[in-house]
Length: 184
View 1 (cartoon, rainbow, N blue to C red):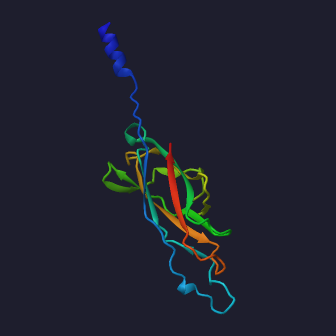
View 2 (spheres, rainbow, N blue to C red):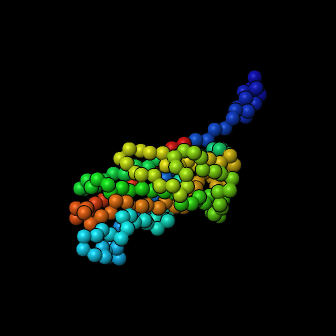
View 3 (spheres, rainbow, N blue to C red):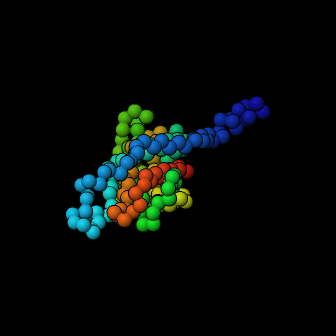
């Protein structure tokens, strides 16, 4: 009987549960518009939008792996905006897009391209802007059937675009916080 109990314990599958964590680095202040000054009286800015650097924000997503992070690595990212201070004038819109793949890290040390993974149809495709709102929206998802990254994908680049700029906007300081949420 003792031998049967020991054998049963050894045959039980091992399940590892990870807590997911997202780290966001970067911020963006819209540059001075002196280079976009209207060229004649009564005209508007030369361009009605401004874009950040293509890697203005970097997302690091950890703890997304299956057994030892080697099988079934995956996560979904949602995004939303929160306006603090004065409300945004009608027509002033913030958009975000993923501009790259990010890197997996072999045992947390050596960066590797995510060649064994792929971005899913969850959210918007790479290089397509998503208009941010105050509600959580599906931004993108990642899935890999095999990964040596121990469940981490780092340095996923995000770019922003502010649209609707005009000399007719009320002069004020507008502040928007972008919040990213990770889920399995």
